[in-house]
Image (tube, rainbow, N blue to C red):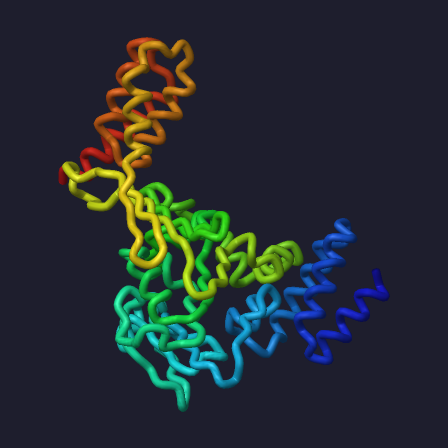
Length: 348
């Protein structure tokens, strides 16, 4: 281990950073008993790392973007830490620094044109850019299907990155960062699923984010280092060329309007969209056969799914039937109270 560790340190000192972190990652897997100490050393390396943008911190280790010096490259949503290989920058708000940047000013780069626009509606020509970089933007989108179509319209290829649902929930960042939607990759398709109210509320405690941002112990340093060393596990990282498939699942399309709690699914690439209410139909089919259940656990799971998908009246109906068949228990009482509170909020 010491020989390999010396090589990793030499690589880092010689500024061959990706190779250094590759060796560190292999060492951590090979020597699990020393993993905490090794990861704490990786954290110290990141603190001395000369680059603070996502591309140099971890994206370049995962992907070869294939960008040539002559390429025209757009960073859409560049904010205060622009993509270093971008030739053009764009952001939804250049002056309102609280909009997604927590008060940090937009960063202008000399010689790089800047545009103020939404990813859902840009002023650019078809296939104007050789590469479109869109990092930690689409989780904010009101209409991700429009954003996907626009990215494919203006770009020949590109890169998309968002936080995973687990990262948003455990870091308690969905609500404070105005993240509206979970983005996952499945079989080379991006799946957009609207967050439920409970998922947006998250853990209601940002202790893990505090640990990551300002670790105090060796174990906390080790945890923070893993965020950069294993980025594919906490981010959705998606490289595309020409076009890509996507699917949008929305269950709270009209939040606050009790008469418009409908589920919808949009699927497609450019110019291809479909609506599908199969999930609601499945739920309602389950309700129609509820009297045949002889175990309450599937019914409690069904009630929870209905509640989290916004079908409050149906969820209350199932709760009532559970009580009639099996009597009251803490799980049903808790679900009933959650439903009542949510109905009160929607009626206010």
